[in-house]
Amino acid sequence: MKRTRAMSLLLVGVLALTGCSTTGTTDTGSATTTASSTSTAQTLSTADTTELFSSRDLEVGYDEETSTKITLSGDSASSDSDAVQVDGSTITITDEGTYILSGALNDGQIIVNAEDTDKVQLVLNGVNITSATSAAIYVAQADKVFVTTASGSENTLTNGGEYIAIDDNNIDSVIFSKSDLTLNGEGSLTIDAKAGHGIVSKDDLVLTSGTYTITAASQGISGKDSVCIADGTYKITSGKDAIHAENTDDANKGFVYIAGGTFTVQADGDGISASASVQIDDGKFSITTGEGSASATRKTEQMGDPRQQDQTQTENTDTDTDSTSQKGIKSGTTLTINGGTFETDTVDDSIHAGGDIAVTDGTFTLKTGDDAMHSDANVTIQGGAFSIPTCYEGIEGLTVTIDDGTFDITANDDGINAADGSATSNRPGEANDNCAITVNGGEFTIVSDGDCLDSNGALTIAGGTLNLTCNGNGNTALDCDGTYTHTGGSVTTNDGSEENPNEMGGGGQGAPNHQNGQGGPNGGNPPSDGQIQQKDGETT
Image (cartoon, rainbow, N blue to C red):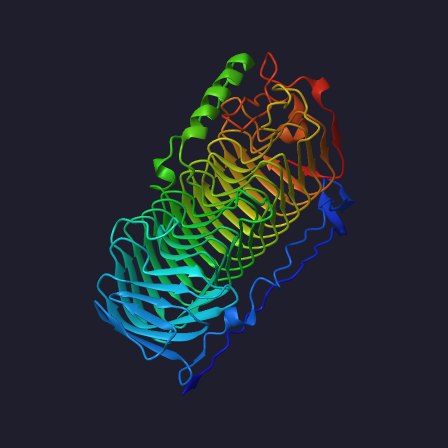
């Protein structure tokens, strides 16, 4: 009988979003003025993903009549194919083809050792394989291997708690592959890695369908060149990162791409981590790291002598460097989110990038002991709904540009912060031309113990509705060290700082990599540090 069933998947290619000019009416008290605001957002382009999933990656069917059957029987196995070598409880597959496995191995292993041009499909149809001292499935050589769970089947793969070398490769996971590896299917797969990782590919790792429950002492899912997920359901409990891609040899590799799926993650490291880029187009994500945001040591704003603040920053930064990263989603370079639902409860940043962050859509509920969203470069948000009930700072980057979206932020320090965390950044209170906050639209409700909006450079409000409440502590709702420009939108504060952010009190120095404007001798920023340009905007 021939079983063929193809998955349909809509992959997003290049998404171009251009800035636009809008004309709106703003209420400036007794007069009504027509104000023109032009979005300064740059065109956002996501990666071309059309080549990441082949038709065979998405295909979960197979031809039972032409496939080779392998029956597992405790301490041995049987098959009528010359391409299947049985040595006790070690089964080695040496040729291209589709192999249907059923039964159990009490302490055994499936090895794929074929030609480097061969494609091999392993269909798991009710298997339970335990390897006490190695991988349950080991791909030593092939062009590509597909591990497919048969429709309705339940399968379990386990490592017993240690790995003893059987060749020159460092086998350290329940499924270990030296070649490209794809997992798909319409059944379920439970992986229990009492030591090491759950699934590892030393090349590209692709998952397109199926249901997976992974418990791993170390990483849950790991790909050296990439981890690409089209769909599926994943419950991952990991001692380190839940989903991990890292390539130290090629800066363009080590990326994560997720088109969709449902993810429930409990990680003692990062939820999703890539040495290169991360792109998420859709999916449902529930990510908890460590013991959650409530377990984090709360940072506090450092007020007083700037020289003491600089010293404090250095000491704290050194401490952070030595600690375990427990972020929700982390990229070494760019991070792009085009949609999805995200719920996080993280010790460190919920969303973090070493490069630019771009968000075009999505629903976010972010609880964190640090920043809800942090970029070492630029943050651009063009839409989405953000609920951030617990954080140190809500959104932080060198620049922050927001075109649209809804934002409900409660922050222990700043709600939105533009700061330069580099060693060459300006001293507190001095305007930094590299830093800027630009608000072109959106609805904002921000309650902060620090500044609601704090820019170490320019602050521009060209649209949107902002309801800002600063709880004092020497801080203000609006604070900037550079030019303040208000050309559109409605701004309401509880302290009047929208009238003159540069001369209001506050702007104390933040904790490591969280630099706020330093107040002047009497708590106000020197007028010379910035100029105010206010036009046609409502301030109350």
